[in-house]
Image (cartoon, rainbow, N blue to C red):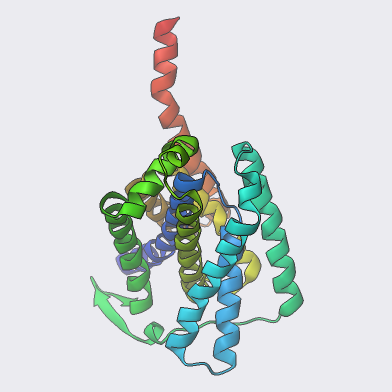
Length: 291
């Protein structure tokens, strides 16, 4: 029984890592541009399908994987440079809804290029595993978990130690003031869209391997990714990582209990709702004292 729990824990951590990577991509972009990109999942899906196509055409694995990330960057920057600037001064809700439109466009293109035939995306690391506490863990799952941790640490250092990272933080605080100070707004925003797109391509690649290579399934990954970002209040990368891992593990563990298994799809909403409730707790207490 303990081994079964271990298997589901490992699976939950791997999938939760992907949710965390998605949430990190959303947080980085939102902090720099104010855009909550609901097209993140669709960008990941298109990148994963592109990777499958390259592998089918017998491209070398490393080349296909690198081009997958490039595809994510291209689709992300395409929106960031062609559509997002026209909405820069609009309300956050308008910016978010516009990305839903981009999601529908990408899904339409995916459906036009590829039919609904079942497909499978495999990585060489699926066949390599290590035994941890009696449970065999594939290297792909280890890569997913390690990547989420490394990305968080790397992005924190990038935002704190590099000039463009500091500019991204300044832009997040106040776009108008940043422009008056001479910060190259277009360059900084393009970098944010680039980083987010690279993470989307990488996440789509791993998601297509570890979960399922289905454009719709990968697209809706944006829901738990957004929930993870909310756990970080759309600001904190470490809290986003913790939120993503928690959602993944909770989803996996609910699968073990048949009466609760149908509720696993509600996990992102439950976790995000509890976090929002907790964040509002202090404000409610202040309101009561003021009255």
